[in-house]
Length: 400
Image (tube, rainbow, N blue to C red; front, side):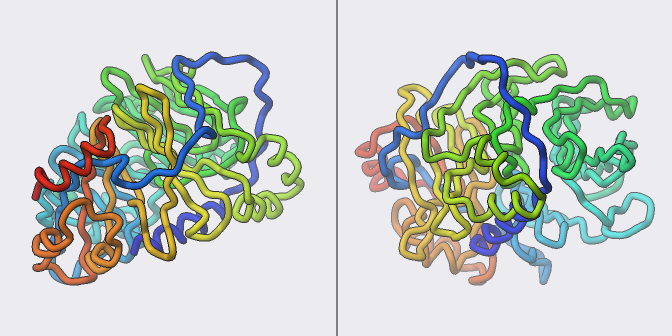
């Protein structure tokens, strides 16, 4: 299932529309700079010390048709499948509800899903359609609907939504919009855009993987652009502030010049981005101890790798996601201050021994009651700990 998901992400990349990248004229000094080109090879034991495996008990025949996105909160687990149906679980993996009854053309239903969010302030699920934002409770009872200022005549179509409060949201335009490199602040109580920020001058290349772009870091809200840029920005008072984190990607990374050389047509740029042998940053996942940066440099599974950067000592390691056709590092779907989350089917997990921290037999016993096709949530604890400490904990303090 995860392999199909990764392949699907590459299909998404191949469908990214042409965008014109602006030039970076101003010198920007971020609060923190991390050099991702100075890395050594590491392993999963260098990164995580604890693993909690949570079986996801699906209800009857309501299995997802490939996992596309995962969102984890303190109390719920949300899974979006390839059919745009949501499956909701408790934090312990108990099946609660799904959105299949809301697929349609009637009131409180959606037929085209552009993006989604779990709003921790209002405790509601938000589904973004081409022209409206729909709100549901945890049982998928429809609560309300708000018009969003999309405008097909001006090539403004929104593809992602995030939340700053119960009524304050962020809307991100799609790649086919006239200027996709914008952050638009939207108030659902007034149905108005309250502010807009543009980061076009910082874009190196169009890219994307997953839907996570907002991270809560202590008292700050950080914005990770869905395009490849050197920066992560702070958000405050409905404004995109100056960058707080800067990445140095190194000489093996794609450059703005590379993109400009292949942008004579949408098809040329698309094909170049899919097959480009240079490193293209696909996503960031931020935790308090470490930052995880996903890269690709080709169109094969073996061409994907992650760079893990320690935020204190600034040292980085890289790990290939697949080694000898075996998955050697989890595909990260979500993260919070202390954990990163992955979802995988039972059969693939038991065949991917590199993903298992601790005793494989104990994990097999824990998930023995679910079918091979069922999914499990992998909750990895991220800590600043040396490898020896991790190994010792695996032996003596494994949690189930």
